[in-house]
Length: 450
Image 1 (cartoon, rainbow, N blue to C red):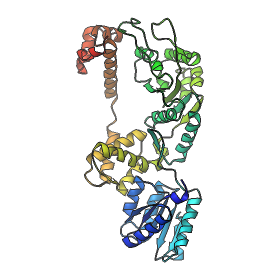
Image 2 (cartoon, one colour):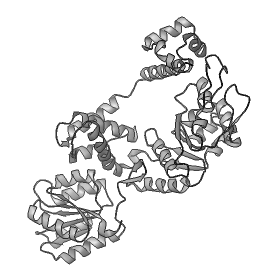
Image 3 (cartoon, rainbow, N blue to C red):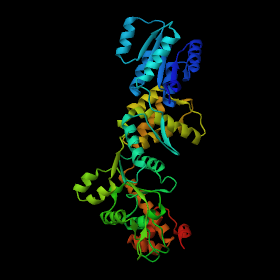
Image 4 (cartoon, one colour):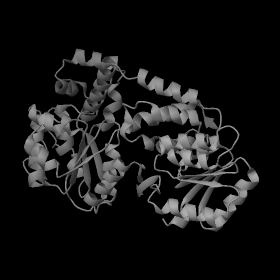
């Protein structure tokens, strides 16, 4: 994007001057957004971040310096030019010391302002566009740390090297894996993801490599594994750190030999799959503790991409929140225009242990309950608080896992309770009790039988 196409946000509470300035800059080729107040400018920052902010100093409500201070906390690299009819040398010195890029006193010549704008945009202060996208996958960022990861992802995508994506839960590991796939020569082939920690050990081998009919009790038909399903494309092994040690040995063999043996089969099946693995665990510590194979680690870890937590990329929070707002407006058939400045401040300063996933939940709760144009501070604060309060208890998490496990068993056996009970190593009466506890009807799974 050239300087002349840069997006400029202009804030002035004088509608005539605002319009004149906007027309002048538009005529120069800039993309101009108008804000009739400091509060409106701050809201627009979250919706469509500019490359430069120009603001009048004296405005009703939030004045130019208050707007600058708020913007500077969220977007410290964004250049700001302040215009005023009340300028003095001490004011200008004080403003520039606080980080304002330029300070012009009205009346000023148009060429003086244009020169100041060109200078601001030429010093490398232009921020990245709000979405770095490849086809249907977008990573929303202006964080330098995140941009570095995306640059590395683009480089590795064109190779066929195995990639290990590290980062805390909810930080976007699967999204980054999809982006690598979309930018790779394998983009036209399948992308298949499996969470290695969510599937019971008894079923994970079959899910990965497949099985033949009769391989074990309940194997009522041939089953194609995920390696075969991803043929020619990419297989994401999410939470690879949770993979049981016996399966790590078999996975290593598949990666080395480029062929897999379905459970119960005599012959192997050739596989052409790029493997991307992801984990929130410290695999070096897992290796030291004897829970992860070092040889598998080096096979998976040709290139490592480590995602920062949301707390480490707070400058992205307003952009992410606005991106989620656009999606959720469509989902809930609403026309919310943005967030109140105080609401944005709450989000930027909050702790986000659940990372981007938690931020999405907060925005969704706020959108669902909002009845005005701008989401107010109270709704966001309540949603943030409830997110911390609503973490599942250990008992709830166990119940959810148990139900998912039962559903997988019933699908695998086509609703045959006797076979499912054998696989679960439980007697029929106990197994029926489990089904009753989770309101599961075996008959509804007969569709999965031969």
